[in-house]
Amino acid sequence: MSHDILVTTGDYALKDVVDVSVMGHKFFYHWDDAAPTGTINLLHIFPATAEIFDQLKLIRKWDNVSISGREILKIDKYDSEGKYLGYMTDAGCNTILVTSVTILANETPVP
Image (tube, rainbow, N blue to C red; front, side, top):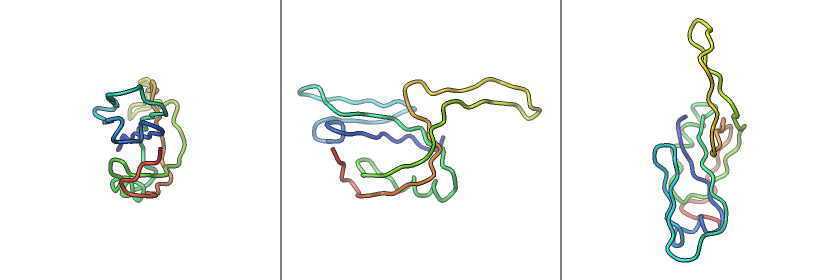
């Protein structure tokens, strides 16, 4: 995974209402007044190409973006000799093979 991107709507997309951050593949948020409404999703990103990787590097906090791709539900792991080593699934987040990235507006969240 090359990136963790937090996608928010509603109050979670209002930087004056909710403070959000991502560290170590986990998201954190804090608010001072009434409990926020809206959605908050953490995307664990696998870029499909080097071009997509470069586009993902341009995204900054609070940008309004469109990200498309396929969700990965399970990753099977094998060693170099083909021996099955186990699998990975994502608990609570979304692991995405990203095929398209568009920055719609810089530092302009949409509630």
